Image 1 (tube, helix red, strand yellow):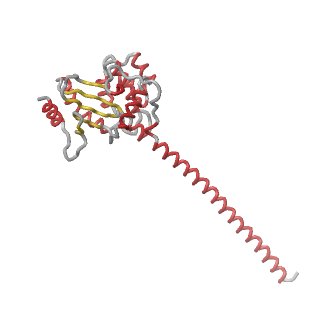
Image 2: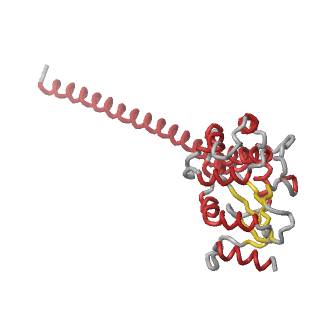
Image 3: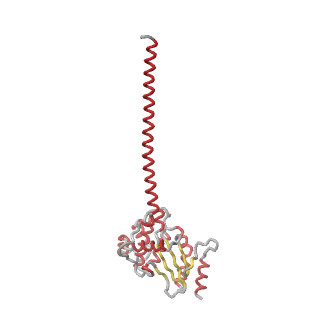
Length: 258
């Protein structure tokens, strides 16, 4: 065989080998594109599902069927937990969420003033419960804590337990109140509350639908957030240009009492 023929066959073999390598490279790129498209599709679906879950977070509660309101609850649909004397000239309406840090800040600042004015017969307080943080952060701590507070109301100890919950509020992302055992443990700080009746009420979710209906009322009222605080129907909390103080709250109540 001549040198020329050997060179021709070698060149042909090299061309075939080169074409095979190019084909392998094309196949590899095609597989990568297919896998990449599949991954994008999965991530896209996950994103859509995530958005749907986030968008529907406030609508998970079931308000259908019979509602068990706590003993002594008043107002429309028995959604109000009252504190103080009915004869008081001023009414403080408070919408709160037990997981809400701003609600804890409000309670820590104004708790003693509110109790003092209520004890003096000058102020009637109407508590309303919402589950805003469950919808925003996930979990069930707002619902579970509100149900437990309703159980405390059944025992005539709402105010004491309400205060214990806010004093022991976990960090906002921590759904510690979602555990009934934790709520029952905290009830031990209220004299005579942690009874078998209270424990059963908490574990059975006796007032879950009442809480859901209360939160629905919060949404229907188109309130901006928690806490929402109104004195005699007028919003008094959250105005940075005219911030509320305990002294101002006391004076407003005294003025209305004249």
